[in-house]
Length: 431
Image (cartoon, rainbow, N blue to C red):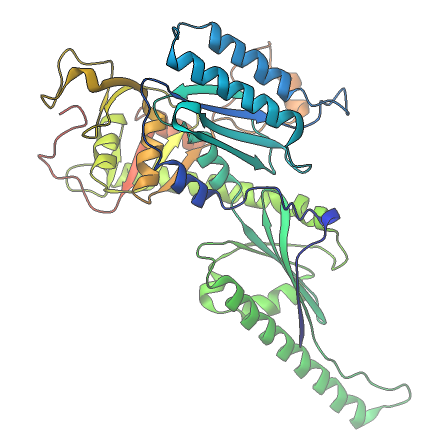
């Protein structure tokens, strides 16, 4: 078997300017020092073309309007406003000249006072938004990381295989594998034909076995990367049987695709399967947290218990609805965090001047990243087709909520699967 390892060319979506290792980016951003007096600006900017105006990207104008409203808000003057204005100006300059051609969205984290400016171009669309806080708001970036994580597609027939790794809707790396087959000369027959046929079938089996070994080697260092098999049933079934059990367990489905399918056709065909697998993971995470919650159990439900578990490093997986919101407070000098409005006195007898209001969802995500926990941001809206949208009785009507989101709603929109259980007398998040 011959193997060619190559990076996909530009028309196949190589995307050299797109940031793909989002976990490493998040790990770096959570180490930034909190800044209460001059808060961080976190902005997400949609960079897709307008549907009705193909040559225009409205995201820049949307950001400018959102930034203007932010400056007109009750933020006062002085260092905070000066820093914020500098951050906005720098983002606008980046949007005017520095966005990579392939970007569909950009995430910015900036604080001029702290000397921080991070532009993170993405290969997927994000909604334009702005937020300010004493730490970067990383919820959207964390959601992009887990919703558009790398997956593998193996296209195969009896002579050739292509293993492609896809991230954010772009093919990033591809390995071609080709087998060597014996062909029967015209005019041969009888025993010679049978022998050649047996030899050809043996070579096909050897090819599948070699492909299976190569796939195992390629996926071994990519822990948790799901795999989709693509091709005719005979080839995908034979390859599935040849795979090591550990790799079989990663196969989430099969597609009927021809070897000559383009990179975009592979992405378009595989994405619905990946989306369905993500919804299944969300539901399993909610179920695990719910079923294991309680004294001594490996689950926590609700904002208070989840925040407690996060502060003590007990969380294995944070599970949060994408519309979860709650007020909170923080003392970054301790550090300590709590649920609800600012307390009248310091819960830990510290300096009241160190307490600051925070967006609790953002701090939960930050604590989860710091403790190397997995994060599942649950998609609350059920996708609706264009025909179904026409049946919605009036503009602004609520879209149907997903099963996982409704299950999580019962606990206030947030829960956690734990590494070890909460003690019966363990202090709550509000002490």
